[in-house]
Length: 253
Image (tube, rainbow, N blue to C red; front, side):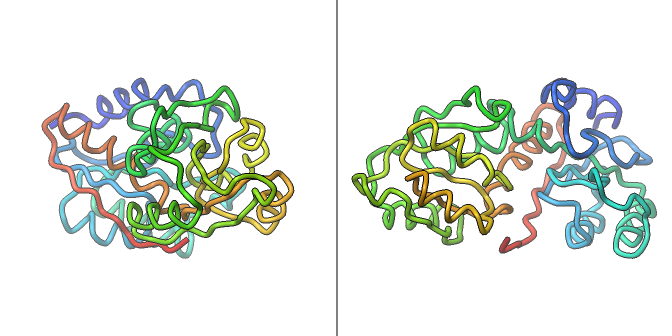
């Protein structure tokens, strides 16, 4: 058991929250009514996550995608109101870490994805605020082979855009950033890697991959970001003797 304020203070320091200018508040987003014994974690603070975490008796819910995003209507009405009422009735806290959880060198989404995909020599670059990582495959693979390897690891087939029509087809050096990081593709190409992996794809990403000469793999936003919040939850459970349950709400996007 740990007091909520102590838990969030520990996470804030561990993840270096003060160093980030983010699109949402990091840390405690909705205050709970009791110390934390049971911690549920998940990617997004959706109604479906609440529907599983609250009956389990979670004292706090830890997510990567919380509430109160910059530019959104701040009123708690409609869908947001229903979520908030359920959480407040339960007395459960909501804790969210966005960019700090992407970037953490051990527990972060980029580090954890590297482990899941078996990427070697994984390290952050000095580009995109340290959110763009690079490494290599254990052995060179054709794009079709890499697609199969990713699908086996993540449980979904990535969308592949061939870009290296004038270079050898084997892929070895890769860069990646989880989530909605398709906009980093030019920075990735500037590293001289064979392929870039991120969560989402936009209309222009196809043209960028072709014109920059870099293969692109869209892994799925959710699929690429399941691992950081789970790793953080497991770390907190071990350190503070908490019950922890990671709840994976399926999302094809």
